[in-house]
Length: 150
Image 1 (spheres, helix red, strand yellow):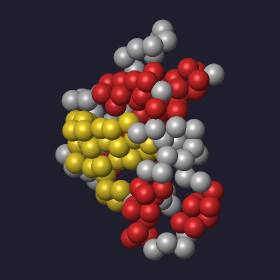
Image 2: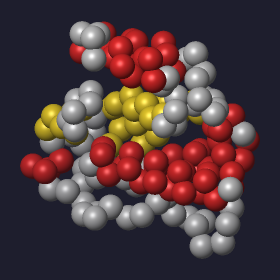
Image 3: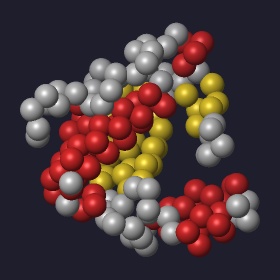
Image 4: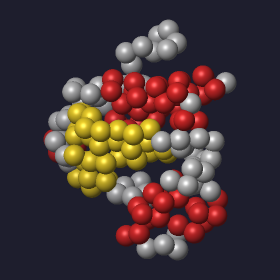
């Protein structure tokens, strides 16, 4: 791992801790909504930018929202895109990011790094919002993987 990044998992969140009132509740940025609450076990999936083909992204608006998860999962499992996460060094970066704050900001129950996306099962801790946790994972891994891949 490059010097200066060992022991970090991305840029610290703008607000390191959240009050219980700020933490709890449904959130959405126009995508699938998520419930943000401490001590809640959640399945989080994040993906590479090119993992959903253009024809699928155009079609998703015609699919009922209740069927999005299954449709997206099925498409991701087809392995579209660059598949950079199958490179052992890149997969290791993802694993390190996921485990960096395990037991502190969240508890990692399970994870799986696929060629073009990542599955995690985590339990968030009080004071640490899900969106900040996922942002830290994605920011750190993207920067480090892009540096590795040149």
